[in-house]
Length: 73
Image 1: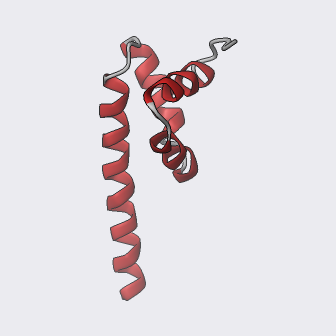
Image 2 (image 1 turned 90 degrees about the vertical axis):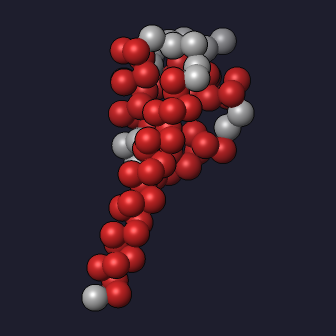
Image 3 (image 1 turned 120 degrees about the vertical axis):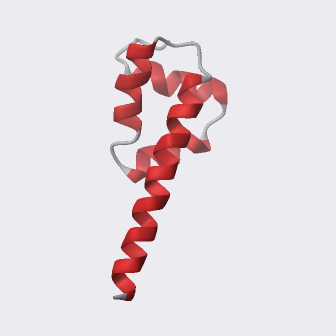
């Protein structure tokens, strides 16, 4: 039973982080289509999500471009 409660808490935390990722992506100068595509990629797993939030705004833009298939030089 305790394990189930832990799993539910973890799922809630991830859900909250996904919403926060979308809010962070809204602040970047990207199109809605890019936000959706990159948002799905960033929130696909917990490691990408954690990495996204560890970055500054400029680094987030580089990640967004890379995930969106844009060449970054």
